[in-house]
Image 1 (cartoon, one colour):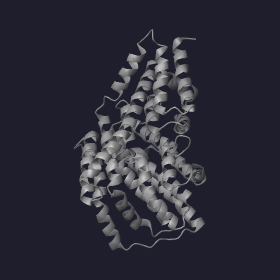
Image 2 (cartoon, rainbow, N blue to C red):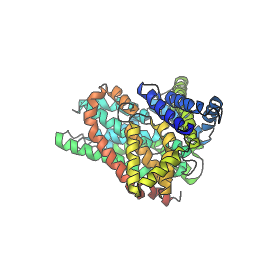
Image 3 (cartoon, rainbow, N blue to C red):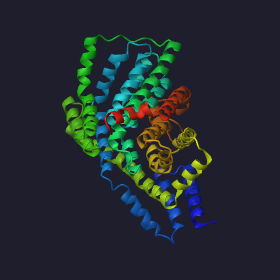
Image 4 (cartoon, rainbow, N blue to C red):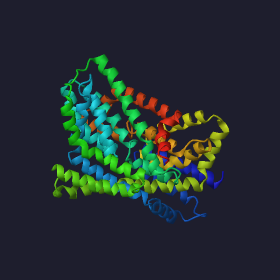
Length: 434
C-alpha cells in the first residue's frame, strides 16, 4: 500500500474518530490534517506546511466581510430591530389562521436576511415569539420547530456569510454578487413552503385567527421598520450595481446598523464594548474553522482526492441527475455531524468540479449546497440552530424532534426543487447579467 493511500486513510479515520469522541470540529480537522501530513514528511515539512496553509487560507480580502457582517448582526440583535420587524410581519399576516406562526417565519426571513446569521435570527426572534405563541395556544415545541427551520432562510437570502465562504472555496468561479442575488428566490421559496405546512397544521388543529390589522396600522409598522429593511437594499443593491464590493458593503452595514440602533435608542455607546467583544469571539471561532478547513482542502488537492472522487462518480454514473442526488444525500449526512462552514470549505473542492464537468453552474451548485447544509443545522447531533432554538424556547431537543420532522421534509422537498430546476436559482443572476 502506497504512502499516499495510507495518508488518505489516516486523514479520514482520525477525523471521524475525533468527531466521535466529541472533539470540536475545528480541532478535529486540524489534528487529522497534521497527522496525515506527518506521513508525508519525506515530501514536505508537515508542521510548516499546515501553518502556512492555515495562514494563507484566510489571506483573502473577501473574508474581511465576515467580521463586519457578524458585528452588524450583533448590533441589530440588540438594537431593537427584531421587535420592529416582528411588529411589521405581524401586521401583515397575524389575521390568518395560525397567524403568529407565519409571523415567526416572516420575521425570521427578514431578520436573518438583514443580520446574515441563522443563530442570531433564532435567538432574537425565538426569544420574543415563543412566549407570544404559547399565550395564543401554540405548543412550545411546535413554536421552536417553526423558529429553528425558518431561521435558516437568512443563510440563503443575502447578505450571507456562508455564501462569501463558498465564493472563496469555489476558487472565484462563483462571484459573491451572483450568489447574493441568486439566493433570493430559493430563500423566499423555502419560507413560503414552511408557511404552507403551517397553514395545513393550523387548519387541522384549529389554531385561532389573530386580529386583522387595518391598513393604516400596517403603514405605521412599515414606517417603523422601513430603515431596517432599507439596509437590504443598500447592501445588496450596492453590490449588484457595482457601487461597492461585498467587503465594503459589510463595513457600510456596520456603520448603518450602529447609527440606526443609536437613533432608536435601544442601545447606547456604553453597550458597544460588549457588542465588539461578542462579535470578536464569534469571528474568532469562524476564522479558526476556516483556517483548519482550508488546510484540509489543500491536503485534498495535494493527494488528488477531488480527482479520484470525480473520476469514480463519472465512471459509475452517467446521469448528472443521479450524481446530483448522490451528492445531496452525502451532504445531508455530512450536515448532521459537521458545521456548515467547514463542510462548505472541505466539500466544495471535491464536488464542485464534478458538477461543473456535467454542465452545472457554480452559482447554482453553491445555493444547492448551502440549502442542503442548512438542513443539517436543524438536525442532531451537531445542529447548532436546533440547540439554540430549543434553548431559547426552554424545551428539550427530544421534545422538538417530533414536530420538527415534517418541517425537515418540507425543506428537503424545496432542496429537490432548487436542485433540479436551475431557473429558480439562476433567473435573477441572468436577469442582472451576473
